[in-house]
Image (cartoon, rainbow, N blue to C red):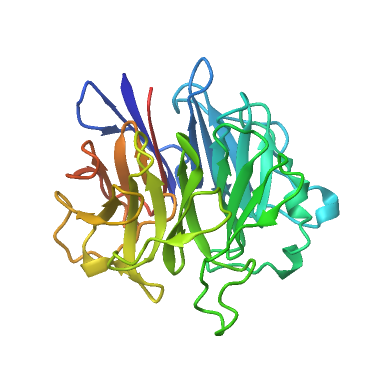
Length: 358
């Protein structure tokens, strides 16, 4: 058994490995100087496949794959994610790569400008999900600070017809017919930056990240620009669960792989002060679906620290809980966050972290 950690950064991909309980060892950088904004570890096939959404500075964005745990990489002969000419759009970035839990060979991709893509060959070539692209509300969609990015894709764990996405600063949308049609699903999510009386719009919320657990597929956890929420009906309605946190502003949210009631967040002070609460790295965990929260900082620097953790840079997995910071440090926990160990330092700005046991 080997634990694999994939760390996408502003300047390259770093792969760390651990076996037999030994400390993680970080391999030499892949894609040096190239931005790696999304990573997936697809364990469904006879051999695991790594996927990486990269951004060449000169040649633009693409998706690469590796079937030998990152030793060698391949790219499709034609652009893997390319907008149809009729859209008049061009790809800026691939923000998310998500293997389907119900359809072998299917990988979903979320991209900028906000769009959903489907691959049926394990992530080599993708086609645009036109039902979302042609949604009647699209002309009113506005970008967040990071752009008009579709950063979260949640395929339902048991029903391939149901899928949900989140885009900044558009909101949460869901489909019950495989992506042919879509509805906004933002009920009770407050957008306090809007005028009084208009703070609960149908869409236009700045959702930062959404997480779920396959054992309870209709339960979702959402980190908003202002607020942390839970839904028990796949986005039909949302309940605020962030009141017990020291701050409800942040970017990542993730669910424990073995317990759908256990969820992790990384609070920052505020949208105008995007530094860790108390200027300490502190992951907060709830063991009861968001009713109560506890601070988990043992083994982390005493501070002061000032680097944030981005939306895809915190992950709970069978290999442990991990997060990477914007100043290039990566920490891991083997005891559900009770204690932390430094895995890597002096990396470039960490954009995404993914982990798996192989």
